[in-house]
Length: 105
Image 1 (tube, rainbow, N blue to C red):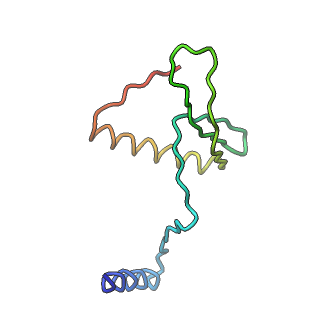
Image 2 (cartoon, rainbow, N blue to C red):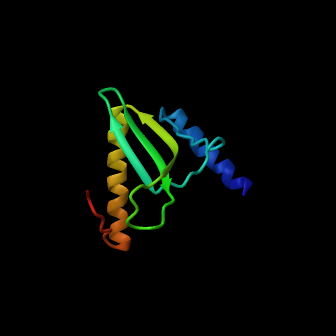
């Protein structure tokens, strides 16, 4: 195991020496949150996404309460890149598991 880590670090050193940028993902402060609801709004300068959970299980209710838990604000360029990434991952998902039918409205 230690040998594999040393080989990985040696490979990273070679890339850095060749002038390539090394990307390291730091997940030390990462948290995980489940969401089954997302709302998106935008201005000229930013795109805001609100995530939450709809915990109402009965259909036909006149009022639903969504517990909002997370807000992500990004600039339009990052939002565009996210849109492309999500589109690509959903194409891969549907190729493996079949098309997802959703209602738009």
